[in-house]
Amino acid sequence: MSEHRIEPRIEVQPTPEALATAVAGELLSRLADLQAAGRVPQIALTGGTIADAVHREIARLSPESGVDWGAVVVWFGDERFVAPDSPDRNAGQARAAFLDAVGASRVYEIPATDAAATVEDAAAAYAELIRAHGSGAFDVVMLGIGPDGHVASLFPGLPGVTVTDAIAIGVHDSPKPPPERVSLTLECLNRADAIWFLASGESKADAVARALAAEGSVGETPARGVVGRPPSDTPSVPTHPTAPHPDPNDTPTEITWWLDPQAAAEL
Image (tube, rainbow, N blue to C red; front, side):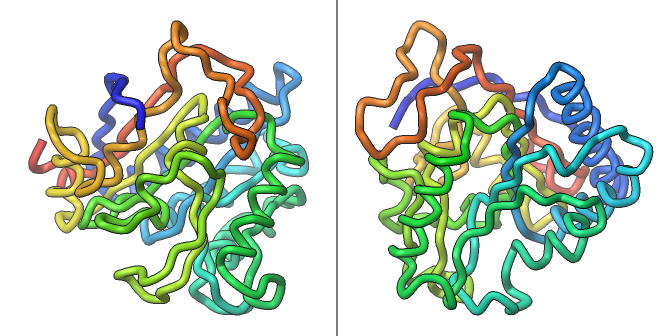
């Protein structure tokens, strides 16, 4: 695991509602700028309460944004390995909150139990989708953080935190139900132009503080492993055959923590 660290930007909004509006507005602005420059943006979504609020704000603000959602490629950082119609699925929640409403058509879901026999099969299939349809780096990765410091479905003490030779992995024995999940790896999540952490509420304050502390263990607080693209003097071309495509951009990743006062209380 790389030990480089990029100084993050901390954005504290006065309320969860203001936080959701700010994130949605910034995402839409960024997508519009990328499309104006002739790019096809690629983003990775997260689940959770604050993410759902952000998604609903995206739906509300999209009509005036100029974003063509039919030309945005949408991925998911992790997913519960459950039936396709389960309310636990991040993809289903995102579709209900905004993807269907805005006309997003290039949405790549992590396979559900009807399309893969095991979480390992689902992870392998999703990795192939990223190899086939990814651009080498996400334009924006959005991540929640759990009170235990987990991100995506990479939990403290589980082996997924240390994986460096895969795009996506199967997760067993998740401490949060359901127990079986699929997650992008830290290596894959770090291949991004911008990484945005979303955290709201006092239950997240300790994890946010641990993630941003000068010292700490990725094994104990997996969010610490989301450090972005290595500095430009470090080769970004992957050295193993199962990595995503080589990253075309060697500029440092922009890392932003979007917080409300309760989540920022211990900083």
